[in-house]
Image 1: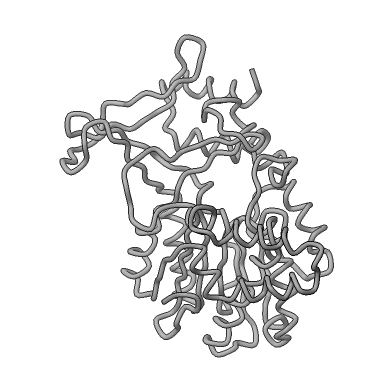
Image 2: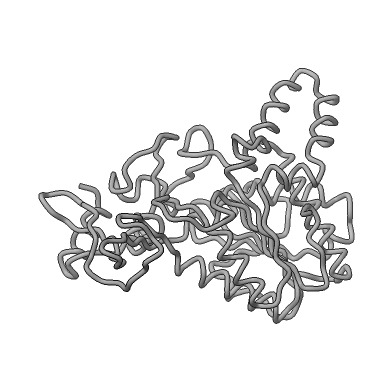
Length: 348
């Protein structure tokens, strides 16, 4: 039994059960034993591969969006460029490389990486050793004296989710218990009626995602700016269990080896869009494939293939992986939030 599993079982013995969002938060972020606190999970040697690790063009397209948005903001002489969950620093490295094409933008950008993992922070320092970077743990730590643009790739999906199961027209929260010498998931007897959902259906919501989103929007409203987040999820909310675990690029039980597996859940982009619009922002959501195509990823790929004919087939395959509807291009979604006076480039 791992140290983290023992901690979880001890907590359950005190309280009787543990809500799924609390379990997920401990598995990923426990200070000593959490998944993200103890390892580099990215790449073929890790548990999963993200878009910036697949092709440099992904970060270059995000960089193009950022430069366009900065210009539409009036090209402020100084602004905070904030990446949430920056992984190995690959995305920011590619953004800052392409930013050299617009030196005033690069000079204006004060880069902040919001990172809780000491392991990943050290990797980011090496990846971005030639850049001036500021690290923060929470967006509350950002300065309030300049405009701000937030970005995040596969960040929201790692924030904890709650789950409820519908039985007899009542919602019952799903919780983790310890029975028969094993962790198990059961439904608790609590909740209110919800007649539109079929009996037995599972509903998810994430108070953590909503809290972060509202805090971020409040920061943008106070300082002006924009946000761009990319993740896998739904353009329209739907019922279903999306909480999943991955270890060594293979799906495993979410109860297997706590702290040793990546836990994620699909993001409700409709909820993010509604909150943004209710708060007075311009907000649009779209698939990753459509977003990248509108920003010109195919043209950029053609240039790379001409300059490196030996790797042309590999480059083409990587681009297809990012944009095709039956691959990441359809599974991943994008939401852009901007001040009402701005237009989000890359959207219809």
